[in-house]
Length: 221
Ligand SMILES: Cc1cc2nc3c(=O)[nH]c(=O)nc-3n(C[C@H](O)[C@H](O)[C@H](O)COP(=O)(O)O)c2cc1C
Image 1 (tube, rainbow, N blue to C red):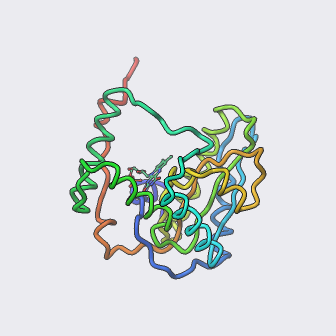
Image 2: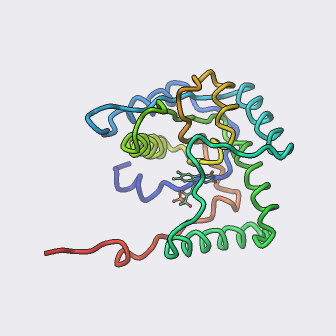
């Protein structure tokens, strides 16, 4: 599969088959993603891959925190507002997904709790990759780790695997870092569930749209 095909084919997968991915494949994905560019070749990324009973344990821990109503404290704060044109895209995305899933989005609290629980179950994926970096790093390094994340997802796609990047998997950053043995001095950036996609589930029939190119590109000549 070439690069263009991977970019066009990748989509967020929200239902996986439980079959584990060979360790060697997961290792190759991270190995290849290390070729991502970074500011001054700083490579400000570290990763943990969690699988098996440990993944189940973490899932139960997160669902417990959610059910007890513990306040989410992600290391990277959740955005509180968006510029109007971006807010419109987000609302359209939520509306389309809730229609597909038959969920009443006007019951926003219920929607979020359900969505978070599904996220905390890793959408049934056999593995999750947690990305983190030193907390002292500047926003440039967050940009770099984002590129690393995209390389992971595109490489996984080339291997016939599905992925979904999940900010929700950083909701309880302190607890997750403790569980995974990541030092407190690091900041948790993103979780990525990974595995073989279950394309028979309707959740995976959703294809997100994109803003028209005329709205994001300007020519100066
Ligand atoms: C930084 C980041 C955080 C995200 N967090 C979540 C999440 O917590 N849960 C989820 O289901 N999807 C999450 N997504 C997936 C986006 O909703 C998805 O990328 C977007 O709707 C575009 O759809 P596509 O990935 O299928 O192209 C996240 C994506 C990014 C880049």
